[in-house]
Image 1 (cartoon, rainbow, N blue to C red):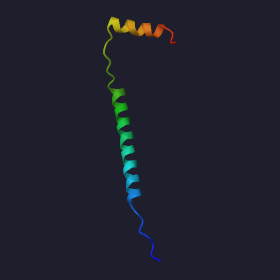
Image 2 (image 1 turned 180 degrees about the vertical axis):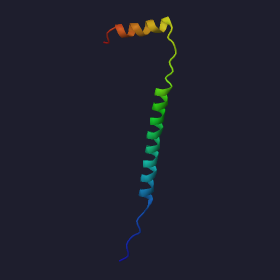
Image 3 (image 1 turned 135 degrees about the horizontal axis):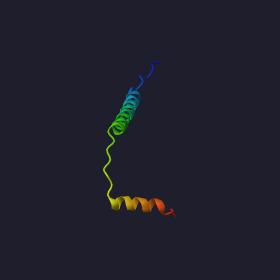
Image 4 (image 1 turned 90 degrees about the vertical axis):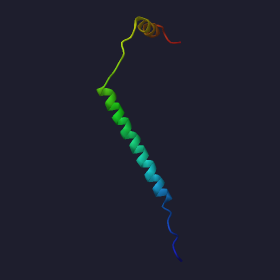
Length: 61
């Protein structure tokens, strides 16, 4: 009896998924590194600081 030829679809899909996940991980690592190196924060005005202070002081329910 002749053997059935094995489909390559599963292997190709698995390789594509693995490559896509790997690419996403590399992009995330690069973005985190760039964020650490170029930390940019805007100065807070008095009103914003007051809102943050009030939010931290009031107990959560």
